[in-house]
Length: 455
Picture: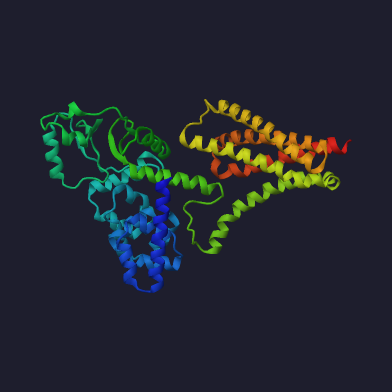
């Protein structure tokens, strides 16, 4: 949390400095600032600027940084930057990218640029790129970088050191070599620390580490992030179904996955896309939100129809109109708490078919306990407010019913939506709100109609 706060402060400082430099109209000041930043930091700034200023800043970014910036920005901003960049500059910008980074943005590039980039690559790199592109983007295969350093188990560390010196350039985030047979079958890992600290005459086979399992190429990106977290990995090998080494995944790729997952959960709960440009044209942004607003309108009208059915009751007991928002709000909050826990548990693999019933029973128990506690509090408040014992009892019962309903809905809705292949983070909140609103109206106003008006 501390590091996240520091990152936000740093981005804000950079944005303030950049805005001052742009306001001054002195391009040299803007260039000086940009030259002091890396691709990720420039990407954050570009996403934070209105489109007119974004274009000015983009034109001042050094071409050899353009590729790193394009990898870091979201899809919509990237598309705009690519449109505003000449083909020659694009070819130069992406030519030095790592294979995995190039694979992430290749399909966004113009066809002519793709052709020239592929033509400039050697056969081995083209094959590696095709290999990465053959796997889904959100899988281990889509994340991996095929640029790996491998050694045989029967060579000495002295040979390994001479090989590394001869190779010269090493991959980024390099902490271990991978041990393979001549056929390419993965055997284990050789830590760089062991290579540097052990006797040069020692054999690789004596120091091979097999404690960490390789990652299957078909594993989801989300599960890869979980594996890195559980095993405190910096890098990990990726293998196919036959155990052949295909590439490696590094911690910087996993951090991107974690960040994207967090953004996805926050934004989709509001019907937004993490790839949207915050400074997109007004009509463009409005159209994207129409569908979600329409869905919300339909569900809200459903609750209004149920409420309309009890119009006579509301006309006679005006107190109900004052109190029923309390019932709906309490149920909605209780349901949202459970819904959030379930969605997070699904994302981390902690919720499955085997333990979902246990979670359901636990959340129901929590709903009952909280319902009893707050029913006493709110029922007492309603009695003291209006001096009506019956109204206080109805309020208390409705709170219990809606908190239990909220807990039940919050636990079941994400499971049902996932089985229907619908993202729970996207649709769960709307469905939950509808359920708790309708149950709250039925429990509170329906019971009031039966008990208070009947008597």
